[in-house]
Amino acid sequence: MGATKTDHFTDKQNQIATIAKALGHPARIAIIEYLLKVNECICGDIVNELPLAQPTVSQHLKELKNAGLIKGNIEGNSVCYCIDEKTFDVLKEYFARIILTVTNQKCC
Amino acid sequence: MGATKTDHFTDKQNQIATIAKALGHPARIAIIEYLLKVNECICGDIVNELPLAQPTVSQHLKELKNAGLIKGNIEGNSVCYCIDEKTFDVLKEYFARIILTVTNQKCC
DNA sequence: AAATATTATCGTAATATTGCAATATAAAAA
DNA sequence: TTTTTATATTGCAATATTACGATAATATTT
Image (cartoon, rainbow over all chains, first blue to last red; front, side, top):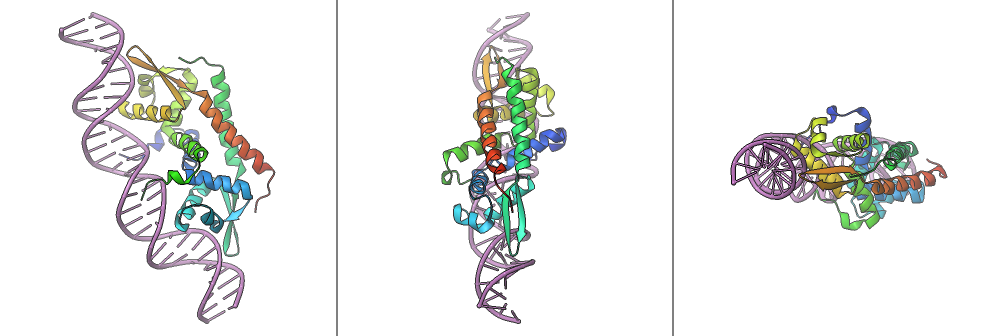
């Protein structure tokens, strides 16, 4: 036990859960907000901004990238990171549909 | 180590992360989608629907409720669960703002 | 009151996440 | 080519999450 039963759920359910999970940490939200503010930056900038060590930030960036929430382009010896809009769109559309459906329902 | 450094981030960042984290599991997404389909239901209905034991479902419901994503009203000896729209609205608005901001940016 | 139905809690095992020091990797600069 | 700069990876300790059997709690039914 302890492992999530991923194979019992649909691909869409796993996709949404994976994206949401990547956003389920304040440090990663802070990274997204920082990227939003500065448009693009390198890992070192985030290390200077957040109260976390460089390996920790690097790991958070990796998870955000795996979830498709950010892009990372190699530029010389540094990596330029920025937000990947399309994955946020997936989430926004998903929640919009939920809200639209719920509005027509009456709760207990 | 292993504990999240919650106090180093803003209330808003922690709020969004907490909600996202609650949605970061396929079983909880499946519960939300089931509630969306049937409007309202009791815990036992979800147990019949998902490949998870009753205590596990109860725990997932607790986390969704703590995050404000669902409501649970006691009705006799059962509990009627349904989606709590306003917390989804918080997320939708948050992502909408991100997308709006990113659209005006050029990436590396 | 006893039996039943429904949900929550406890305890525990398995696994995952978080965070960082140390180190590796790779490109740029000296 | 050596040094510097920037990032990633490894390994590990602390903590959190996931899942479930056993059991408790509570209201309904008989």
